[in-house]
Each structure stands twice: as structure tokens, then as C-alpha cells.
Length: 279
Ligand code: HPA
Image (cartoon, rainbow, N blue to C red; front, side, top):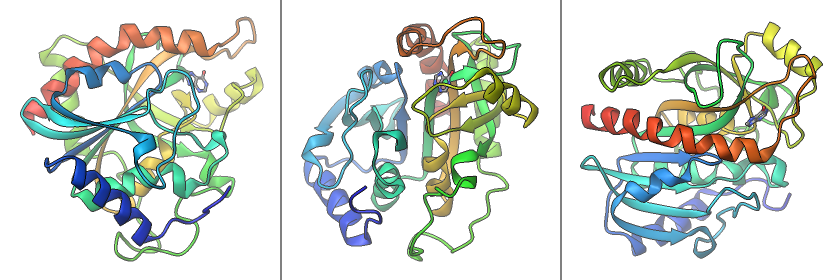
């Protein structure tokens, strides 16, 4: 865990590198999760920057994460899309995991659309479903790994930021409207963020169900925490890739997580395009 806390100067170094490579002023940032990177192929007039070209930027080691920034236009909105992300389980600090969100904030991004692949804990969800994230459980933060631990960067926000409406109600309503307009089923629920990388035991999952979780994954919560600290509005959508295995009778694999992406991407694209048009 080198560089536990990145400084404002380092964040600005990344932002300056991006400005030198793209003349666009992105308004919306998007993070595409496991198996969902295909959405970046729909971006018009793309300026593409491999993560490896950016100083301090964490490069994902996980298969299914392409590892590039795509800056361009989607439904006439200037967007900055992360095709792939890094996870805490890759062995980097929370400050590195969330660096991209800080950079987006310095670039003037107002809205973060965060997506992920998640396992269904709610028995009414099936692989291929989309779930609007209405709230989250920050188990990793509760265990002592909140990304805001460390010196507070007052330039972004206060020491003790409010998280009562982490997922923006107006954006949630736009997503619901988008789903009904495009005839796309959109489940809703609470996402619980764990560190991974091992999947959950059946006892873990029964516990998470009791705690009020509908879907489980290994990302998103740190990024949303940093987004809200800097007053960035958040829309979160999970792609349900598998049924979490509360009875221990089936196994979960990364391959099925990636395969479900093919079902999810077209639906996600419909909803996001419609939300972008409404913004
Ligand atoms: N558990 C945790 N993370 C996940 C899962 C899961 O079942 N599916 C996709 N990401």
C-alpha cells in the first residue's frame, strides 16, 4: 500500500494530463463495472487515454476491465467514461481506489454515474436484471477502511460529510422514468459493498440479507463516498450478474459475472441514454 494518501497536487497533476489530451469539458463521469465496459463503444468523438498514460492512476489487474478513459459525447452530453476500475482487493490504498473520482471533481464533473456487477441477495432478482441503487451499506468503511480516513481535503468538502441522500433522488426519478419509457425492467434496492476478493459464504449472505442488503459487490461504495464528500450527485445502477448463493448449493464464478454483462449492457445503455437526454 504505497502512497496511502494522495495530495491535491497529485490529483491536479492527473487532471492537467487529461486536459492536455482532451479539449472537452466533461459534465458527467461514468464508471463501468465488470463486463459492462462495452457501453464506452457508443461514445461519439472519443478521446481515449489508457490508464497507464496517467500519473498516479491505478491500473486494474482484473480480467474484464479494459483500463482506459474515454472522453466524448453521449446523447449530446460531454461525458468522461472509465472503462474499468480498480478495487481495494487489488492491494492499493482507498485513496488510490478513489483517485479517479477526485480527478473528475477537479475536472468539473457534476454527476457521477456508477455501475457495477453485483450478486443478487434479494430472491426476486435474477441474473441480467438491473437494480437502481437507492442506498448502500458501507461494510468496508465500518471495518475501518473509509476512503475519507486521513487528512481532510477541505477543498472538496467537510470532515464529516452527510450521507443521508447518497444516491440523488432527482436522478433516481429520472432513471425510473427512463425505465418506464423504454419498457425496461428496473429493480431497486440496497447495495452492500464488501472488500472481496473471495465471494461470500452462505452464512455471510444470510447475514447480509438480514442487514437489509438486496445486492452485493466489491466496489462502488468508496467511490460514492468520495463523490458525496465533494458534493457530486450520484446515480448508481447494479447489473445483477448472479444469484448469491444463500443455501450453499451452487457456486459463483467471475466468468458468469462477465457473461451476464452481455444481457445487461443493452438495457443499461437504454436507461442511461434516456437519463442523459433528460438532463
Ligand atoms: N458477490 C460479490 N461480488 C459480486 C458478486 C457476488 O456474488 N457478483 C458480482 N460481484
